[in-house]
Structure formats: C-alpha cells, structure tokens
Length: 471
Image 1 (cartoon, rainbow, N blue to C red):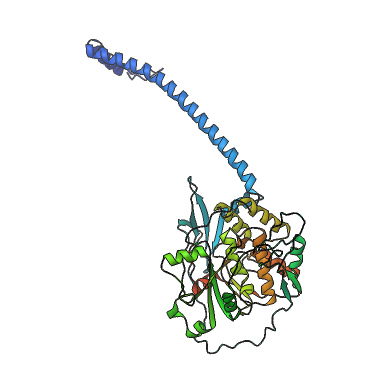
Image 2 (tube, rainbow, N blue to C red):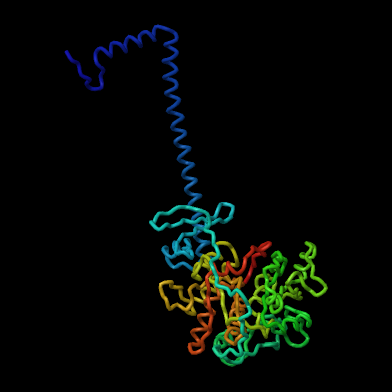
C-alpha cells in the first residue's frame, strides 16, 4: 500500500529509520554531547542574530542622518554661490560640455571631482552610430593653414580706407574726485557707469584706456617703462609681443633658424618682464645681452606693476598694444575660438568649478551681462556675428585702427572693472559694440583653434598664481 506525506509527517519507512538513528545517538555519550551542543548553539544564534540586527539598524539610521545633513548643507552652499542655472535640465546641460571637433565628431566632457578636491576630465565619445564609450580627454591637433612661400610679393598698404574712422583720445590724468583724502589713483582710472555706457559708441571721444595718472604729487599708477624702450616700441611697424609677470612662465624663444631674414629685419619681438621674472631667468642662465636681447626677444622691463593680480597685469600688453606700439599695423582684429567651449554660460561654470576666480565676483559680472542682453550662441544660425562666444585669447592679430583700438580699450575696461578672466567679457564687449554702432562695421575675424595650433605653440604656466580673495 502506498503511503503519502500528510500534515508534514514522513513516510512510514523513513520515520522508522530516523527513530533508529536518534535512538542510537541517545544511547552513547557522544550522541548526548552532539544533541546538547546543537540545542545550545541554536539558542545562542538566535540571541546574537537579534543583537546584530539591532546594531545594523542603528548604524544605518546614523549614516542616513549624516548623509541627509551633508546634502542639506551642500545644497545650501550651492544656492549661495551658484546663481546661474535656472532649471534642473539647464544644470544638467551645463555639467556636460559638448565638444565638437574640426571633423564634426562630438563628445561629452565630464568634470570629475574627487574627495580631495582634485579635478579630472573624462570624455564620453559619441561615435557615428550613436554608441558611447569612455576615454581620456580628447586631444586637439593643428590643421593646414595656407601661407605664402615667399614675402617678396608683400605690398605695404597706402591707407586703410576700408576701415571705420573716427578720433580717439585717452584719459591721461584724473584729478581728485572729492575733498575726502581717500582718493587713490588707479591705473585704469575711475570710470563711472555713465562714462562706460557712452564709451561704447564709435565716435570722436576721450575714454579710459589704462595708463591713467593721478593728480600732481601722487605716485605713478604703474606699468613704468624707461624712455629708451618707449622710443624703440614707437618705431615698430609690425610687433610680436608677449609678457611674463610674477615669474609665472618659462621664457620660450622664437626659433631663429625657422625665421626668415625678412621677419628678423622688419618685426619687433618684444617680451615684457618684471624684476622678479628677470631675476629668475638670470638665475637659470637667461640674461639679456648688452643690447637688451635674449635671443630674438627685445627685453622690456616693467617697473611698478599696476595690479597685484598677475593675470590682470598681463592684460595690459595683451589688450593695450596700441598704447605701447602706436605705429604698428596688422589685420584689423583676429582671434581664435576656444577649443572646447563656445557659450559664456559654459565658461562661467568651468571657471567656478576649477576655482579660477572668486565665485561671487564671477556671478556679479555674469548677472550684469545677462541683464544687458548677453545672448547664448546658436551654432544653427548662420548669421550669428561670432562662431563662438568664447575665444582662445593666447594669440591675437590686430591693426591699430580706431575700431580695433576702441574694442581693445572697452575689453580692457571690463577686465579692470570686473574679473581678470577675459574670456567672460569678450563676447559681451564685441556684441555691445556692434549693437550700439550698426552703421560702423568692425572687421573682427574669429578663426579655428586648429589654425592657431598650426601657427603657435601654447605652453602651460610655470606655476598658477594665487586665487584672488576679493574682486
């Protein structure tokens, strides 16, 4: 007869076998110890299990509480210092920089911040079939630039009839603006907001453009150059200039063997240095010769730097070359686009991520520009005046025409008024100048970054200058 398992009972045959086994264990001392251990071990396991569950639950509650407090304070700090994104989607868009290479391929660049505050870049490369893969930061390469094989066919232009003409004068001296003794002369002067607004009109005017002296009896406002060097720069028709202040860079010499004799005879290569940098270079074996040259560079020593911020001081020869080389001539204005970023929104966020400048000062500047109509660049619009709103400003070509000089003064005044991060003010300055002077064209050409790489080589700074604590 077949027996089935019912109500948890075993088959008759299996039950009898188990009873026999347990009976045999009970009849021996060894069997008694095994049974007692099993019952004791079972009681202890249940007790310990309850204690572990209680401890794990308490630990998890503590961790969740700490994490919640951390997220609360982090959100509070972000709301205090980051006023740019207006929506979650916009914040997400800003956190991923879309990189468009010269061949049309795109990739997303993510900024990865580790626990120790260090940052690194990680690219998510998007292939033609839509698949994504992670990789290192995308490398940028030069592209072909058409250059003449010889300079024999160069013709000096008789005039600049294609450029807009008007007369510019510069504020040379400011008197005391009040009877209070707190007046302090500044290299950039004390331009009012009303004067700033008026200066954007391309017309006969006198405007602030650096090199502003104080009332008689006050010390120099800075960037002092001896008269012999001034006379040399005054004679320059074509000038290639650079600067190192605060010993922040190594001195890179133009390669003489790759330079034509025509360039050596007709181009002024001028390097502006301060005493600290000159001393550092001399200790490394690079001292000017008896004529003041290091290789092809004519060394011009600047005394009494106008700003403690070396980046801001470096904007003087970068933007105000028409004040230093008043008779040099080039193309009206040309500058390359940035290799990664094209929107000022992205540049603002990147500066704050990497702590390039005081966050509050960046927000004040950007909010001011937004309120004055700074738009976002739209690559889909073929008539947009600029292909990119963020330049790579290490290489600038310009002629000292009235519009070029005016733009340079306006751009410098923004750097003097707000932050030394000149990429934040470039597009705003150009678009406002263009908007306020629709009948007076400014021929600004923005060329590709890969073309800049074919013409010049960019080196990293020797050491990063300290972050300004205040604006």
